[in-house]
Image 1 (cartoon, each protein chain N blue to C red):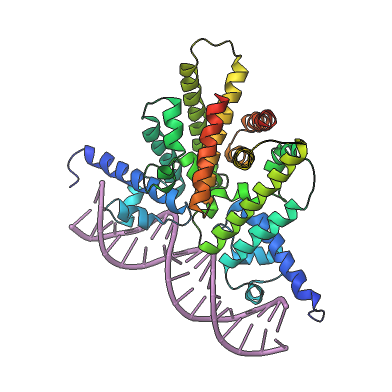
Image 2: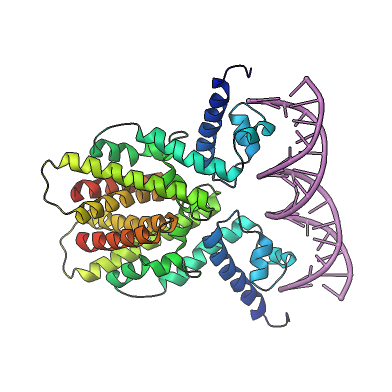
Length: 187
Length: 187
DNA sequence: GTCTATAATTAGATAGAC
DNA sequence: GTCTATCTAATTATAGAC
């Protein structure tokens, strides 16, 4: 079973995917290494030949999940609507770690917080690129562009995080719609 | 020491205050009952004559902390600026549970999620009252007023939560400023 | 009402066989 | 590289003395 050099990387990717889903759904502390490894089709003992610690798994999970999500290219309007949707809020897979782990991350070590912060920076750059595509020729200053991107990012990440915390589907749905409207007005 | 009928309530309030600070700072799972009780000046065994479970403590902590914060009356502009400040982000006390526990809450039981959701509803009503005080005579529809309040709430809660997650003080500070500007423009 | 002592469970991490 | 077995430490919750 361990003959091919690809095998180790396959196992690693399975672990990262399983961790991405479980951490987003249940939070870092409530998910054990045992649970992650079983979801990845292995047992506890195999974990430490892939990662040094549970904390390292966390930081790499944030980066890997975000990369997977950023790979989907589309306009700002399309991105916002699918990001701020009930489908994303209720999804078992493909949840954005910036929103689903936002308050969880603040309590962790430097490794994890750096991963989240750098992922956020990438998110801002992505939004800036999309906003510049929408408005063809632009006279706005650099700081104004950055400020608008920060506002859009907060509305997206914050809106999804609030919708996820709310125990009321109707309220969550109208809140998400209000966030989409806010971004389109501010465009 | 347990002669006065006020004594039990005093102990309870000390537990709720200690839990409010510790949960916001470190998250629910990373704080033990032992730690909470020591911060409140008691030992582990006394906990269960005040609360039935750790989860019940969590839900009551959210309500109690939010009530304490909502007691401060001021204009929307003042409220936003102190809410979206580095002082609030870095505070050891008086952190808003809506922001500091936002992704933590989504994973908990009904008791906790109901407490957060009802606190959020109170927050929306508070914002609506303040927004109506600012604009004297208003022709806006009810749904438009609610939508604006939801957007303001997401910008406040989301902005503070993102600033707290960021491992970069400068970026956090300019992000908070962008959120304040967004709310003032949308007013 | 608060204490000390303890029960019962679970976690992250390591050791060594294959 | 993955397995089983185990170490050590921490947790929530309970029992019973004062």
